[in-house]
Length: 330
Image (cartoon, rainbow, N blue to C red):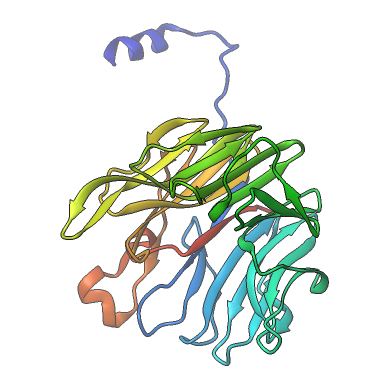
C-alpha cells in the first residue's frame, strides 16, 4: 500500500484521468410486510418511503416497474384489488388479480372472477383470452406482447396467446410448472415430470434433469442464459429437510447464500444486470443480490413499540422483503 502511494505521489502527469463519482441511474423499490400491527410499505434503496398502505389490513401483492414508472397491486381491507401507478390508483376490481406485469406501458393481468370461477388474461384491464383450467397461470411471462403460460397435462405443451402449443421432441407431461419464459425461438420451462416425479427443465429443445437435491422455485431467460432459482437441499431437520439459496445457470450450480432455510425467490432483469431476491422461512429475513453479489439494503425507522427489539433503525433485510422492482431515476 505504501509503495503504491509513493508511486502515485511521484507521478505528475497533467493527463491523469479524473475519477468521477459513481452516479446510480436506477434504484430498487422494496415492498415489505414491515412490523406487525403497522401498514405494509415500499421504500427505495436510500431508505426513503415511497408508499404506505392505507391500513394494516391491506397487503402489497405485486410490485413492478418500467422506466421511471412503478406499479403495484394492493389487496385492500374490503377484499378489492387496487392497481397503482406511481402511487395513484388507476383501477379497482372485485376480481382476484393472480398475476401482474407491465410491458411498453401496457398492463397485463390474470384475473379470476369469483362468481363464475372463470380466469381471464387481461390487457389494460380488458379481457382478451379465457384461461383453461389446466393452465398454470402463475407462471405467465410476456415478451413483445406475446403471453406464455405453463400447462399441467399428460402431454407436454404450453399456452401461448390463446392456443395450446404441443412441445415436439419431449416425452412426459407436466405435473407442475415452476416457470416458463419464451423469447423468440428460445423456450425455457421448468417443471415436475409426470412419469418420474422428478424436477426437470426444457431449454432450447433439450431436456435437462436436476440433481435430486435441487428444488426449483422459478426460472427466467437472462441475456440468452437459462436461470433457475430455488433451494439446494443440504440438511435434514426433524422429519423434514432444508437447504440454501441456489441458482442454476445453464446447468452450472451457484450457492448464493449459505444461510440454512434460505431460498432464491424472485429475479428481475434490467439490461445486463440480474437482481435476485433471497428469503428465509416466511420472508422474515431477506437479501438481494445483483449479478450474484450482495447489495446493501437500507436502514428504516422502527416504530416505538419495536425499538426495544430493533433499536431506532434496522436494516430492511431483517424484517423481510415481499417483492421488489428496478426503477429508473428521473
